[in-house]
Length: 114
Length: 117
Image (cartoon, rainbow over all chains, first blue to last red; front, side, top):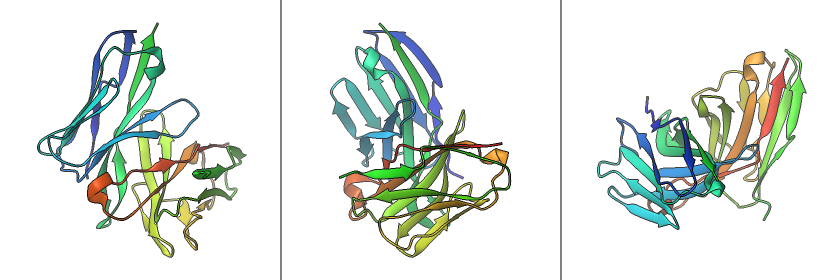
């Protein structure tokens, strides 16, 4: 069974601080995505990484896919209260021998205080 | 485009009742999935479909049925509701094609919050 471990589970920081969220597995994934979810809403895709070692930037967010495609990180620079939310990583896995679904980590709940 | 729509947004059922959660997408996506989200458990895959007429089980399929007669619609049926099925249910869709470019990016609906008493 493929699993994705996210850490930390909870993170409470002050506005302007930097933070990193980790997503680790013992399995290889063909692609990995990061989503952000706000209360009462569905997850919204932030980024997809598909190549080992890939780094993508989205304004103050930096995403990295590990060389072996088993882990990923999300770094936020100068966090703002608008960054508050649940961050989920998800890797493309296999059930029943078929691709076409994602395995999700349990999420990191981020709170950024003004 | 409306994207992925789900109805109802909230539902309360009594144990043993059956119901269908509706999901529709207007993006012509081939892949559609159903997840449930529980506190501390993340999102878990219930059933998924790689195209009309094709469905398969995910991680937690027991107690749920699906069918995919059209590309647009992917309803989830609860056969006999149980308190353990109290959860938030999300439907998602993905485009197919060259996933080497974009992986399996999923677009989620707003969710259905289900309570079984």
